[in-house]
Length: 376
Image (tube, rainbow, N blue to C red; front, top):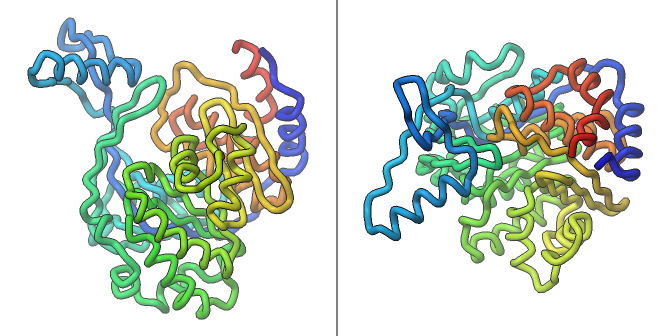
């Protein structure tokens, strides 16, 4: 099955609209930071170095369900493939630096910042606001399981951030940046206090504020309906000060859809995005899934198909890398469909190669993007 006409048009617009080279643009991200231990789960071991890995989430889940049915312990062997800086700020900062921009990231990196974070960056400015929690990310071909120690992030609120960094210092980190990313609401449940603090205390201090805020909610299915409903009031208020883009995966988007009275979860992906734009009360909603992505705002709605990679090198933070490409498209002022194409391409490179592309690698990858659809 080849590429559809709509996706081809947006891909062409992306290739034509992106500049030959990127200016050194300033962006900022806050306020998490996690040490990711990327792990492999073993299905069967034959020898010290001979084993069969668990390839799917279903296989992992079946092992747990079978143990429960037999009323016995569930023992699963795993090992760490690598350790890296994780979380919204770390993933976006790494990707945007690699693509040619100059990020500032504010988050929980340790006091002083742990070597796990400092070794990752050359041109990114790190501002630490606390100790870094740990996440074990078990990789499968069709997804991942994230086991996180989040107590520190659960306590993070505007008072902690403003008192640790200082309002003036935080303003200096955000002022004159073009885009600001905030994440994740799921691991920072008091994120609405941060939105309120930025709107009431930070934004009035900025001479040249970011022109847009990207909010990555992450897996909000674990937050209560009351927490989400009350928090959206703060998000809507922030959108009145600066345009907000909410970027979520399909499951996260459907959780938001369940909060409203509409039947958003029954429509096509671009219809869901358009309905959520109204229901959430924000300027723009982007939804990214395994085989498609969609965007809706006051100017219209767009959808692109995404070529599936059956044997990814990595899946953890693929959504963050989609957001990095989306932001590259926004900085280049290309149209909505072309922004989705840029996001899909950065994420596509990442899952196939295990790291973010340079800008030249992204442009080359976009040049042969259609070919990725031919084997499906």
